[in-house]
Image 1: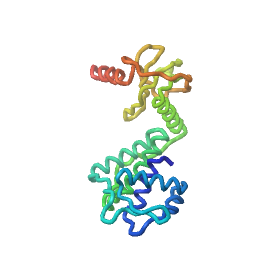
Image 2: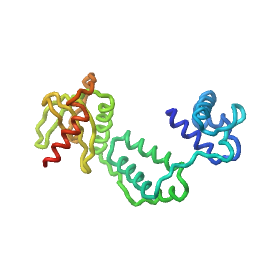
Image 3: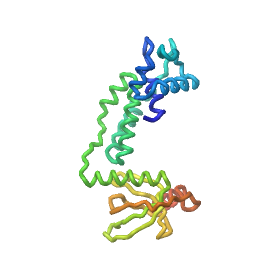
Image 4: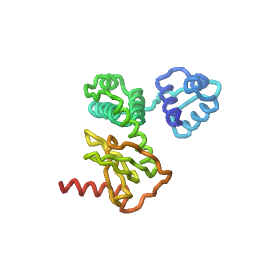
Length: 233
């Protein structure tokens, strides 16, 4: 579990309690050592979170104080729920999993009326994935990792006419166009920006090389090129 997640869960566990929560119980719940709990609580206290108590006794939030819940309007919350559902349905497995986890954390600190509103949202993006869609989700995870790590990729690619080619690319971003994803990249073969659809990538391999952002062929330049291209259509 990431440290940020532990700190969030510690605060959430203490919210609304009238009696001290033993450190040993926190350690058991979080599946960490007592020393880790002591260190995390001390760091929260130093950062200004009003936690009282000490090792061997337990912890609670100072009387009369609380960490205010996240405040969203009903419409803002519905937008978050809808966005999470779309990511869960159409993104890679990694983003889908993390989006769902984020929504669970948000709902954990919502007032009851907004939590009920979130549960009753009627905006859906159903998950009906066949083996091909599962393949695309896996491909998106691979491409996403390469974008984040600035890793050069070798793509076996088929264009709209079914013609095959091998491309060495510097992946810059992923974009969802409502019906399809594209990988925005600098194509070393064409010496220009290109968009590649993941559903047309037959194979994707890391070359073992990483690349640096270079003016004129980085993300900013790519976005400017795309804006110019689509503005002229």
